[in-house]
Length: 315
Image (tube, rainbow, N blue to C red; front, side, top):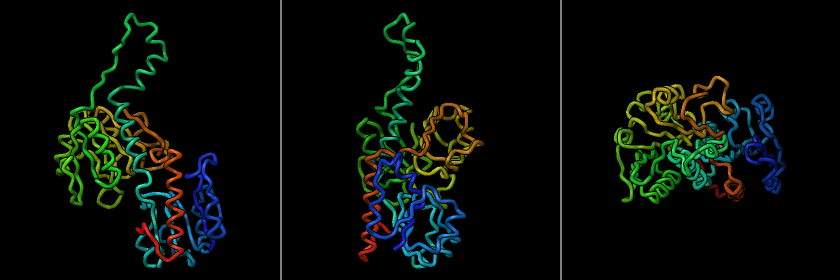
């Protein structure tokens, strides 16, 4: 077996993970972040490709005559042409649920920072504001409680459910919109329009596909409560970035936090650059070391299962 790790630098930061574990399954070629030209030139050499965000589309697959398996260091698989892979008998496996706790934690990091003004108060103190205050307590930024706030969750897979569990611990009301009927009497299942109209916080946890592409746009934001807070840790493509910037600039939204963008790394002309009341993190919700160790284990386990003739986590 000849195995390509096509963008291993996205997984191992400063060599904090041992990615050599795959050498027991074949000859491994390591590439920090393979260029498209190099991938097209060498695709015919590989039996197996293990990747995170590398785009493996129809053109690549048709050149990869020996390719039998694509393993994803990710839950999402919109970078893979699944239909063409199936046509060519290539098994594609993802790493579902590895980042459930980490992403839900990031969602609430955003929420708590927004409602407790943690960054703003820290900046105030670091700049000498408290030292120059006549009062022991300086209340210069508005804060609010999460208790009795309503959070709207779009998609109710493992991450959506974990977000709901944390919200319930804060005594929040939880609304859920999902295409797949679920049973959970702790939350209320509603239409998308009902969720948008009633939620103080809106957070999508759905895959990027034809139906979800830019589902958050000018019309969607207009249906949200005035002063709502929007979060995106799903995929950048579920949001029209210019429309989000406009909703922040107009004051329709009190704030937003995003971990994903349409173009990553962030482009210099990104519409969200300089948007008010916006927190942007560089696609790090999945990145805690414990999370990446779990991911590595799942991907290796997927490889072993495939080689044993019992593939799992097939997409």
